[in-house]
Amino acid sequence: MRKKIAILMAGILSALTLGVGCGKAAVENIAVKKTEAVPREETAAPGQEEEERETGAGENAVGQEEKERKTVFQEEPGETERQKALRERLGAPEHDQMEFEDAQGVSYKIDGKVTVPDADRLVTMPARRLTFGDEEIAQYVKPLLGEGGLYRWEPEEYQECLEHVANWENQIEQEEDESMREVWEELLQWNEERLEALKGEATKVEVPLTMTSYNKMDSGVYYDYLFGLTDWGEETMHLQAAKYGFGLYAWPTLGEQSCTISEEEAQAAAEECVERMGLSGELVLESVERPAVSHGERYEDGGAFYEFHYMRPVCGVPVGYRSAGMGGAGLDVMVDDGGVTEVRYGDYVLEGNEEEAELLPYSEIRRICEEEWRALGSNLPECVSCRVGEIRLTYYWDEGATEDMIPVWTFSGTFRCSSEEGGEMEGRDILLTINAIDGTVISRF
Image (cartoon, rainbow, N blue to C red; front, side, top):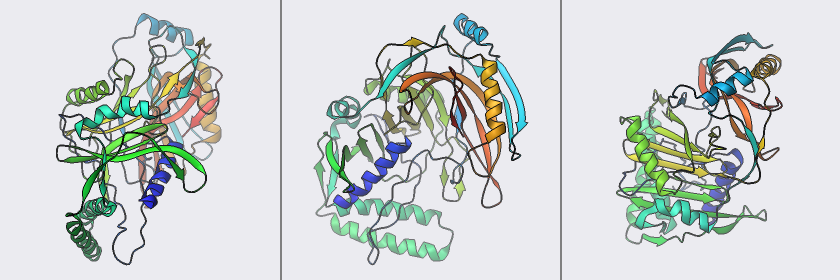
């Protein structure tokens, strides 16, 4: 048990560092389906050393077996008088176009809508990360667990066998090499037999909803952590909670999504989850995605599920999306035909006085964008092209510098990179973020 906890700790620390969390949530009357297939190594078969690895969610499409994540922003009504006034004051067009190449021959094309918020002014405001303790677990996590609560299986080997059986079933389904399929089938049979032998002694042990301190890999660094399983219907969910947030997701994390419901139906399920967490009225829906999912060498074209991104607004303006979960800032709710299938939550707390920000004219932001890309190009190796489809004035948590919420311009779109196989891989993300006050480049893809 201690060895597994130590390994899980390492995965959580990685999530805290990268701002990536994985989780799943459901509400009592919503069935839960399994999420994207992520094969895990068998560790319990005879003659093999035991080792496990945790995989991160939402990894970049470049170098990964995954396709473009297509962002679908909500339709916006006609601009308000405040938006028109802000646009005029900054000299920001409704649409912008620009095309050039950097010194390495990578092509850049901007052809997209320029969006400004419904605000007559933008501000800076101090913020700090929300830390999770027993009070936050009771407030945000407990309402999602229902009456079944949180538990673990004893003996621990029973829980591990359940994971391994799901893993090898998935591996066999995807394997095209007949000789390798025979290997997986042998491992599956061994785990199924072991699982059957353990059934008579397997029991559920309640896990208290309280954070417990663990030593991080014997380094002397301690942090709080909570782990366990919970059930809805015939499905099982897996909770991971740490100092800066939590994730609740299907366990084992194998299977394929099916998503034929409308966006309105999916959003209704997501909103019910937000309400159960007591966050209705505090968070606003920032964007909606229909991510693509890969299963081994087979790719889905996209739309495997809906992913709703909720953010805490500053003076009524939604903060730009960041990865949610443990170390992130926001609430992500995934929904498919089975209902809510995943929840990731981490947040910030706004504190202190706001100060009105004096913003650079849009023409200066545009000049900085072109100068930055012409001189330095993309940070991505083997980048072929970048295409910006949306330019947006929003807020960004400058956690690593001022620790303030600050106004920024984001340039979002698609990028293409050469793959090792000689083809090209495409992905979507925020390609450039520029401080709207002083023109500092905050991040460059």
